[in-house]
Length: 550
Ligand SMILES: C[S@@+](CC[C@H](N)C(=O)[O-])C[C@H]1O[C@@H](n2cnc3c(N)ncnc32)[C@H](O)[C@@H]1O
Image (cartoon, rainbow, N blue to C red; front, side):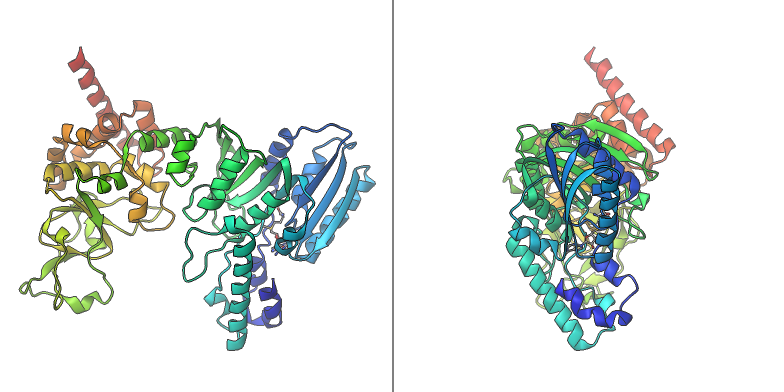
């Protein structure tokens, strides 16, 4: 933590909470402590005469450990280690240990004041229980935070951070992100989790508080895979950002209880809490290993536990978008066309000279164009890409989690060009009917429901889209009449939207009514009226099929 020591003398030039943020001094909420400790205790198998060894390597004021010990009989013997870089927290924790001892608890404790990441790599003692909430910061200089420092202090701060990053990468490789951007990307919560993995005995237990990104983002794959395959996850608790558990920071968080032993079955008990910390759902979910392997080991909890199995069904009973692109028969192409950097230099009202009408993100709506292009794109020596010659699906790249629907896609005509605020897709054989059926799927609840689990930023990336399960091509062909309904919606007849949605769910993805309803309900901004319209359409399609088959 030399990067912090070095700039202590400039504290007046830094924001009031700089050191709190940089060292992750956000202590665990009382209810979260209680729930985690109870679950951890429920998984402990201990003989009353055995001494339990326990450590919190980032203990703060020791609250997790203290809460945990107090759940046991007073006769339980303890060997405790408390580590932290913050002295005042450790002093508080020590006083609490003394208090427990004077109340009759049998506790032999030691305190370490310093850097737990460094300490853990040489610490050869292993523990029955590791409980913690590690710091969650990214190792990355925050330019806004250090803008007032003298130049040399900024440089040496960055250098120390780089050294720290190198140290973490060397000693905790599983904690590393899938990709680093401009050389940064290490997050201390993942390193902290890896510290815990190294401190626990075989068959011992870990209870940890983490940002929810650990269970679903694309950066944490290596560590998540390790936890899922080398350990046995017993419980996951999910807390929404609105619960405001960490001061001003708006973060979703999880607690995970897991045992240091590999298990054939992956079947954690998952509990979801609401913003008032009341349980809204609790269920044991069997997670398929093959599915995990094929889907970056994500556990898609954020939209409801009951929907996890539907998510698996959508993904695994279909063909991934990426496989469609790879297949020579399907000839699907997806990508971006022209870069929008300094785009003004290449746009004009002039429609001569190989110039093409230019489409950009904000012109696109669901099944509609908000704006027709009034400028044309051309560039000296430029050859338009092959895609520009086709009718194609165009979707907006920017997509915020707060939007009612995050996918906004429609068709743009052949002989036009799009900027990179749009993604585009088309079939190379020029099959427009098939393309319109694909648009119906693209704009559907079933598609977005899958996609939301893969989106980790405010952009609809192609890498996320490539993971989406699509119905097999013969189904798309069998329901090619949907292309006519898509035409009607594009011409402003919104009444066909529930019909299209329901065909996609019922016929193309084979969902039951209950499954479809659960998916719709996971879209919190869809109104009650709209839900009724969607379900009515679904029922009609189902009934029609029944009467046909009688
Ligand atoms: C999120 S707080 C959690 C504290 C406590 N475990 C709790 O649950 O409330 C993270 C703790 O990690 C400590 N910390 C941050 N960096 C550290 C480091 N390099 N070595 C040891 N402790 C560190 C902070 O001082 C802080 O107390």
